[in-house]
Length: 136
Image (cartoon, rainbow, N blue to C red; front, side):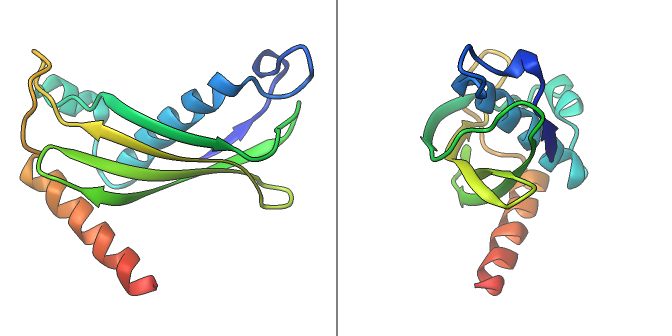
């Protein structure tokens, strides 16, 4: 997913404020799911909710006003009621790595009780992990 950096994204030093990267990654996860035929809204309406339970982020270099960024997302771990994605934010112009993160999401009910990942989602994520493994 691409993200253009606007003035509102930057801090007094003219660089992207660190918490904005979390928002970019959230959007990219939603678009990742959409790109694989899953609607976050439809899942929510069915009582399937994915709250973030852990984020480990490393900030490598700053993004600045008007930069065009690319947020890459891939599934790296799959458990019964949670999954982890690796995300990278890179500057499109030079493919410079700016932020890398591992984000773990739980699958919960509207009452915030853990639930198993639905079979459709588990099968999709399993296939994506297998494809990743074949790529090396």
